[in-house]
Structure formats: C-alpha cells, structure tokens
Length: 440
Image 1 (cartoon, rainbow, N blue to C red):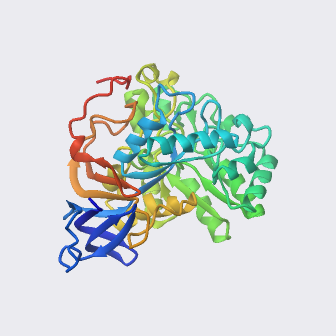
Image 2: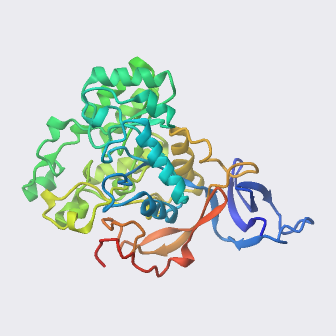
Image 3: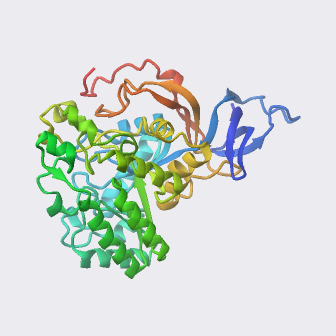
C-alpha cells in the first residue's frame, strides 16, 4: 500500500479542530480534507483506518523520562521504554542523563540517540548533564554534548548548588540556544525527609520535606537566569509557591518555562497514609491545595508543559519499607488519560501542553506541529471519552500510581514518521513480558 488514510476524525489543525481525513505518505502528512469524497480515489491502494469519533493530533512529547539505559537495564531500557512511550501516544522522549555512567559527554549522548533509532518506535532525545558526573564541581563537556544534538541540560536527581557554576553554564548555553533544566531541591532543607512536611508527615511521625526546598532554589535560579538571559526550565514543580515565583519572573521578562507531572496533578500527601512505597517520589506529593494550584497553573499557562518524570524501578526495589524505597513512579502509558481526567480540558489545550509546548522547549522541530500538509507524520489518535483502567504495562516496571484507577481518554494509535507504532486493539490482552520482573 502506498499510504495510510485516517478517515473522519476530529483533526487538530492550525485553524483549530476540524472533521477531516488525513493522508500519510512518505513519512509525512500529504493531505488534510474530505479525501474519501473527492475524485482522486484516495482510498485506492491505501490502508484506511476509520477514526470517526476520535481526535487526531500531534504526537505527545515528554520532556522528562528515565529510560535507565545505560547502566540500569533491569529497571527499564530504551526498547521497553520506547514501547511504553508509543503506547502512551508519545513520538519523542527526552531521556534524562542520570544514567550509569551519567550522560556528560557527546559519545554517551550519541549512544542513547543511536539506540533510540535502532528501536525505531519514538525519537529518543538525550538530555545532557550540566556538571561532570552530576557531582556539581565542574561543567560537563557542554560543547561536545551540544554537537551531539543535546539541547536540554540538567543534573536531574540533584541540584546544581554552586551558583557561580550555574551562571557559567547559563552564559555558555544562552549564546548557543540550549536550556538549563533544574531539579529544584535545597539538599540541606530536605535532608532526612521522605514525604511532604505537614500534617500527614506529623501524623505518621515521618521526616518531612518542606515546599521551601523547591522555592528557595527556583528563586535563586530565576535571579541567575535574569542576569544571564538564559532559557531556564523548572522541572516537576510541586507547590503553589513556585507558580508565584514563575509568574512574577515572567512579568520581568525572564525566559522561564515549567513542567508538571500527571501524578502531581492527581495525588496529594494523603496518598502516603497507606505507606505504599509506590507513593514515594521526588518532589514529594504535597497538599490538596497544591494539587489544585498546579491544575490551575496548567490551565492558565503558568505551567507550560506536562512531563511524566517516568521513573521505573524493579518490583523488589519498591517492595521495602517506605523510608527505604527509591523515589519515583512510572507514567508514560497513563499520562494522556491522567491529564484528560484530572483537568477535563478541551483537546486543543491538552495537546498544547503535552505536544506543542514541550517540543518547543526542547527545540524539536519535527514534533509538536498542528496537523497540516507537509509536516512529519508524528501523530497520535485518541479516544477522548473511553473509560478504562490500567492493569498491565509495557514498561519493565509497574510502580504506577494509576494502576487500578479508572481514567477517561485512551490512546488508540500512534504514528512515528508515518509508521504505526501502537495500536491499542492489539494490546487489550497483552502477554506478560518474561523479563519484566514485576508482580502480576
């Protein structure tokens, strides 16, 4: 067959949502319109997929995922992470650099992007470390990383505490077009904590992590970004105070963007009352008031993008007392449905936050484009209304807070450069992977 015709969907174009057919040929969108009704025989020789009643939009872009390769492949690898991403409607994923070894040099970044191309399901875009070995002592090979295609630089998992070093990194990248993405955590203020510091932590007698650990670093970073003119991105924000800082900085002209995770849009520190180690993450789940503030911030644009912070761990690593468990939850396969259910937004807003904005932040020109002829066919087709409950995962790990939670909205098809990379009808009853290492 010479192409794929998506027939009768609600298509998100630069002019808004319109009911139309979408023709995919040669890895690109060849035409958008009433193609089945036209005289050119659009159906002939092409695979026709009926998407009536569904929404066709630009593939999702994840600014923040841990694919664990190289070095921790028992948790996840680029192949399994790519399968999970495609199932979640993603066509591009920015892989965090806290691998083993950390991605602080160009050859390591090339290894990750090459592995992504070999798997061929999504574009795997390596992020690069700000400092060598993520040790916060000297800058990584920023020029080498930039030459390898890295545009997002972060020591995710730790904060660049040295303000002078951060300034130098910002000045270097400001001149070249990269973005500094910060894991905002003052290590002294959060030392010994395992969850949000507040009423619930007091009730449990557990060491707490105050919201101040985040806001004090964001305030400092915004001042340095204002001084240097650099592009600054706040990772996985968790509290209302950070929103106020970002809003004020933007009013002064600071070039700042921000992301929020689906789990921080859903769950509060009340979740920790169960003492389930799956609910342990960094930043921690905060108060119900913070959850509402984050939802409002995403709706009104103070928060630019949704990012999963997909952080897989093997079952035995989470099957320990809460205080001993590693931080993190998975999120690639449930992100769209979680955001759709939490906010009930119109499709245009959701795709702006999950596709267009993150692609812009990461300088991914081939992704995040409203659908029109000529763009690369990196697309997702979603059922906006389908009710479903996540039970099985394509990720090697199943440390998901959304397992067993009823969600609205489901990814039906994903296309990467015009190739079908996910079809939900084939996965409704998937066979477990023999090497998944997760409980059944």
